[in-house]
Image (tube, rainbow over all chains, first blue to last red; front, side, top):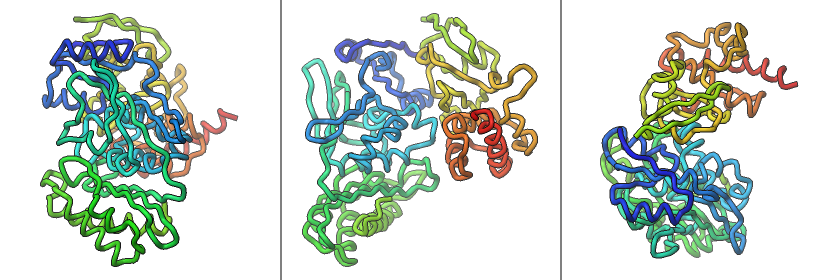
Length: 285
Length: 159
């Protein structure tokens, strides 16, 4: 393991370094990247640490009651934030399930999203929250809806010289019920399936639903087909079963050391059903 | 190319020449002789390499030493005051909180990080705080008992 380590003081300097050096990678908390370098999966000649760039770890109230989370906010920062608990408890539920305490102490939200490993916990939660990625590059800043951010295994829509600087989460509809459920063999593992559900309920009727799944395809995704079935429906067992079926049909899982594809797909159906049942019943845990 | 970094380890400032890619674990063990941070899985699972960074648990196998300059690093060697062991160390001895001992420094430091924040944890909170530390001998019961015992002393000291 050998590389050069640069510590620019601004985002502008950091993107300039990425433009100038094709073999450079951004280093955030290092909880995934250093392991990948160690095991020889990637061999960047230069790491550009964002450590010295100020203001990237802040969690602030966004405009119109939303939430803005800096890319370098650690998972521990997010869990300790009353603002997150109040405005995006769904994200806190997902972040709580990441790795272990030391990993959460140093791993960052931005790092997690850019690493984009199958079965990560924040992606489905942020998709259900309708979040956007705030990016900066030599050609300026832009926002990417999170649904367009994850492009393939370990890949994102960021250009080689672009940096994710933060995540914007819009205000959630009043009275919405949200829940993240994770299936894994050991608590800190990547999810075999992770389900984030956010329901706007009106009595027993679901006015609008957002449902996102991770671990069951190349990238986390919104289960739009299931959402369509849920919108306007009374959430009885029949409607929940139909939605779970539709969500499972959208899955495109792989076999790996943790679970075969067929099992992942089956579990997707089971966990979507559970998530919807519990969210509809107002069990926000 | 090597660079000079100032690390604050166990309340002592040290200046070391290191490669930018050097891990904190290697600096502690190879350059400073602090072998309480153990080499285990080297992939941030087992927690044998646990140290405290500003009083929070950290896996030193997954941190670049150059990036923790100026922060307060504590290894198990930094806990005793002269001949007096830390109450957690004492409790691990009295309650047989270890067998082979390989995971013990990490367990004690993870417990210390918890007790500094919450000196009156439930058993469930103790188990949760050990989620980054594996033991392959004891089955955790004695470890949890040792920490619950050590916590009594932390509470007394805090008063």
